[in-house]
Structure formats: C-alpha cells, structure tokens
Length: 178
Image (cartoon, rainbow, N blue to C red; front, side):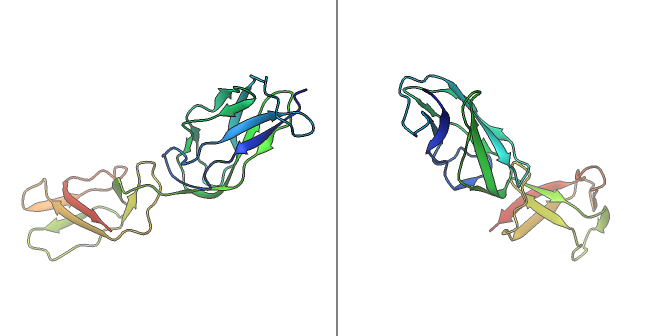
C-alpha cells in the first residue's frame, strides 16, 4: 500500500542559475516500510520549500510516476542562493525533502548603471560610473573585472543618463569581463 515519497535520485547539489539541474531528481513512491510500489502511477509535484534566493522553480514540476518512480527532466532555479530545499508531494502520501542544493551565478549578460547621470565632455580623461555585471536572471556577478568602451550618441558631448531605470543615452561599444 502506498504510504510515502522518497528521493530515489537527488538533484545536483551545485547548479547554475537558469540552467537545468545537472542531475534531475527522481521520486519513488514507497510503502510504509520503504519498499517501492512498482504499480504506482501517481502524479508527484516538486516545490521549493527553503528558498534562500527567492528563486522560482521552472520546468515540468508535476510528473506522473512510471513503475513507481516520478522522473523529472528539465527543472531549474533562476536565482542564486545557498541551501535550497525541494519538497516532493502527493496528496495522501508523506512528503519528502531533497538534500540542500546551491545555485550559482550564470555568465555575464548585462551591465546595470547604478550611479547618477553625468555629462562628459569630449577630451575628458575619465568619469566615474558605478556599474554592476549581472547574468540574464539579474543575479549580481561579483567575480568580474569590467572594462567598458562607450561611444556618445550626442556628438562631442556624451550624456549617459541613468535616471531612467538604468537606461542611458549612448552606446556601449564593448564589454569585457574576466
């Protein structure tokens, strides 16, 4: 008789934001003694129950068991964090928690200007800007060294205006990170 769920295969403990887990979880439907119930075909749902990065679980989060095991294939979390826990659930059965998993930042995808607007005149040696490098899921990349080359869109005077939600007047001609 079906009684509980158990992680047959744990998800990878270290994953990249927005990328499918390297090892996808599989959930076994078991009797009260921990024996598999091979005839079970119940739907099993995975949710995030410990969410240190306010991430979203995406992919197919509800899967029907085949021969008593629900095998997931495309799950991912979009926000970085240490200690995410997934919970497997099915009404009428005791739920199961995964081991802890960590989500790390993905590759650089954009820069965000965090300083106020400034005017730079042609021939000026430099100006200071506060910028952040972020991945496609808006996670901050702290490990990058950033070199920007900017070209003015306003002729000899370029005003890079960050007062409109990070939008600036000008063109980023190159971004180099390492």
